[in-house]
Image (spheres, one colour):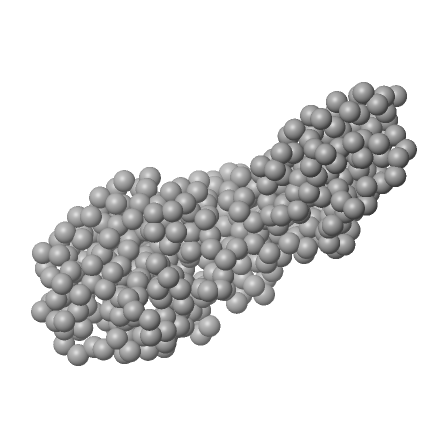
Length: 109
Length: 423
């Protein structure tokens, strides 16, 4: 089954400094373990919300997770398999989200 | 165009040979400095530069006299002056050639600047790869010291100006004024948030004037001959002459001094001898990689700030590039976007996001991975991030990319539909 949903994990300077490489590895592991083959966990270049990082976006759902910590991953992974969205991690300015979602809609991921 | 090749910075408008101190003095060199010993006051020097209408030659075109006035209205002391020879603009060699061949011109200009704004310490900020320029400036400094043009009690007066040479890193942003100040302070070349501008809080927090090397090189002739003499060159709004750099695309590459307002065609065909290649001209990038492209039917555009703005582009620091038919503008702007992405100092999140995103968008266009909706994203990304960086780099990729999409849409459509350049 090919991916129809994408969990995009920012790998730019600030997010990396705050541990986004480990988050990417862990999320890949959890997505594989949970058997959700419709989700591809991918690195992303930059969402422009560096001060709020690490940033992760689930597309096409358009769920934004900011300031993600290792302890948040269980909830995010649960959402991939039908659990509730982790809305408490959405702290991002609406105008930035609109821009990023338009870029993703245009295929930039 | 009778005055076109006369040159007021350098003889005959061509930088050539290594001018000695005696040769420089034979054409009036250090006469302006001598007037300090006679009667000239700092406010008079500032007012002469204000009256001359001299604009900065580093790219922004800010009025030099205005910058000096801002520094002197701040009563904090000490003050500093810096001649910025970082020169990291691709294709620009004018500052290097002036420093290598006319070091005393730069030095006298810097000394006059220091005198005008009441600075006793001045810096020559020079790209560290320019060994010859640094050597020539060091030699010039020694010779000037022997003649009492620099140091303590210049020409027997109470004026003291010490000049230091600071080697600049080669990063693009290291040429930005406040990044230069950081380097002189011994730190990394990272632009500062503004305000405060250097004229308020510059080097070591003190009022500082940073002028491009070419700007500084204009000062001696203005003080020696007066603002009205200077204004006979150029246009009312952009007085004087400017150094323009032509690269290997023309028969005679080099740096040419021309009065501002000279048509672009004169520079390319009369000075440069026209394109080296046989194919037709496709586009002109008249002001370095951050300017918008012009079409061949705009060759009569005068080389001055106002005319270039009216034509939809910018004069920048005078680096003119020619693009022949056959070059794909998608590939061309991808190179430019990639340059700005690599040269972003990564300090400002908005700049990082913008420059990375522009490259990624262009790569998708190049590979034909998407449709026309991709092209709408460029202006949105640029508009969202406009002015959100500490320096001007964040605004630089926009003009070349947006003008290329507007003027050469068939190149972009070809890539979007076939993933290849137009045939």
